[in-house]
Image (cartoon, rainbow, N blue to C red; front, side, top):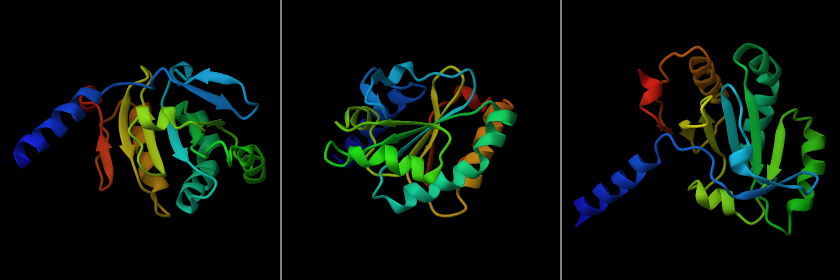
Length: 178
């Protein structure tokens, strides 16, 4: 029975490889609705799920902010932060982002539709998408210094190099590994 359960989980996971962002509604910081599937880019794109109450999330986004400008210039990166703050706390997101000086796109998933659709159970949870919008890498943790791992993945993807798999990370697409 246990083997059958593990096999089922594996089959479901393999079916998700290479998929992009689902067609669910999220909001801009100005309360405008947008479909997550419309978040596209012609280069690597990082999608990071976070919350105002999550200290590791804030540390990760602060660390990435230090590299953001260089990664945009060198790797054609688009950085997207998706707040999972709920309807009660989502009004704190815009002032919080302004106070941090983050210079990337921030959206709110107050109803958790995108979070559920992407299987995000905890934050921080970071996805890396290729130029075709396919998820090729993800990590569901952060400790200081791990932004270097993400930056390595971004640079490898931008230069059509093989991505590396480290502890706490999942490779999502075999097509980028060739």
